[in-house]
Amino acid sequence: MRWFWIDRFEEFVVGQSARTVKNVSLGEEHLDDYNVTWPYMPPPLMIEGLAQSGGLLLGQMSDFKARVVLAKVGRASFDELARPGDRLTYEIRLLSQQPDGAIAEGTIYRNQDTLGRVELVFASLHGPEFEAVELFQPHEFLRMLRSMRLFEVARHPDGTPVKIPAHLLAAENAALAVTTP
Amino acid sequence: MPSNEEVFEKVREALVDALAVDDAEVTPEATMVGDLGAESIDFLDIVYRLEKAFNISISRGELFPDDILTNAEYVSDGRVTASGLAQLKNRMPFADLSKFEQNPLVQDFGNLLTVQDLCNYVQTKLV
Image 1 (tube, each protein chain N blue to C red):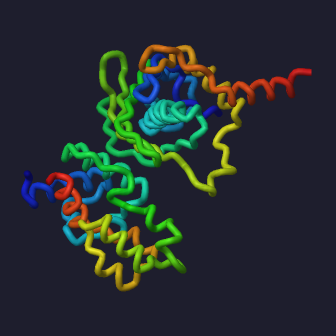
Image 2 (image 1 turned 180 degrees about the horizontal axis):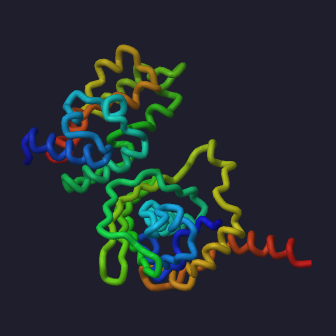
Image 3 (image 1 turned 90 degrees about the vertical axis):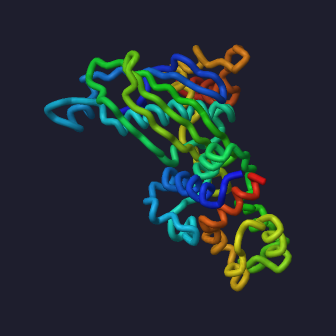
C-alpha cells in the first residue's frame, strides 16, 4: 500500500502555500476498515494529506534536503465527513518558519464547503544523530513528486517555475542507468 | 500597556492551546516542562502564539538561550560555569535563576522556565 494521501498538486507557491487534491474512492480498503457499514474517509488520513502537502511545501525550501516531519497536530476540527466519490481539496499555508520547524494551518474543502480545519507543527530534524538518516530514497522521492505533478504547478512568488533540484535528477539518472541494460 | 493580569490571561490562553492543558493547570509558578509537559517542539508553537497574541517578535535564542549551554566556554562537566551563569542572567533578566544557580546542571535547564517567567519576558517586549 502506498502512503500517498494526496493525488496531485494544483497550486504551489514557494515558502507560502499549496493546494492539493485527494479523490476519495470506494476502492480504498481503509474506508471499509475504518467503519464497516458506512464507509467514510478517516479524518486522521485527511490530516496526513495536509501534512504531506505542508511537508513538501516546507521541504522544497531546502531543495528537499531538510528532513521535515509532522511533529504535532494542534487544533483539528471537522464539520462533516468525506465519503466515497468526494473530491477533497487541501489548502495549506505556512504561518511561521524557524530553523527548527514551522507552523502551518490547513483547511479541507469539498467543493465550496469547508470540511475541517487543522493546525500543524512541523519539525526539521538537524544534528549528527540524523546525518545518516534518509527518509526517502532520492530517486523514489522524485518519482513521487513527479506523480503528484508538483513541478507542473510549482512557482516562486514572482511567478517563475520551480526547477527540479540537481541532486534529485542525478539520483534519478543513476537509478535509470542501473535498471536500463 | 496591558496589566499583569491581562498578560497572564493571554499567556495562559496560548499555553492551553499549545499544550492542551486545562486552564487551572496554568499557574504562575508552574514549570513549562515539568508541570505542563512542554516538549522542545512545543516551544515553536508557544513562541508563535505569543507573537500573535501580543503582536511582538521573538528571535531564536532570546527566550531560550541554548547557545550558552552548548558553548564549551560556559559549561564544564555538565554544569554551567560561573561565567555561564552570568551570561544566562544577562540574557534572561525575566527568569528567576536562583534555584538553578544552586546546582546548575545543564540537563535541568530545560525545566527552568515558569509561566511567570514567560509573563515577565512578554512584559519586557511590550515596554
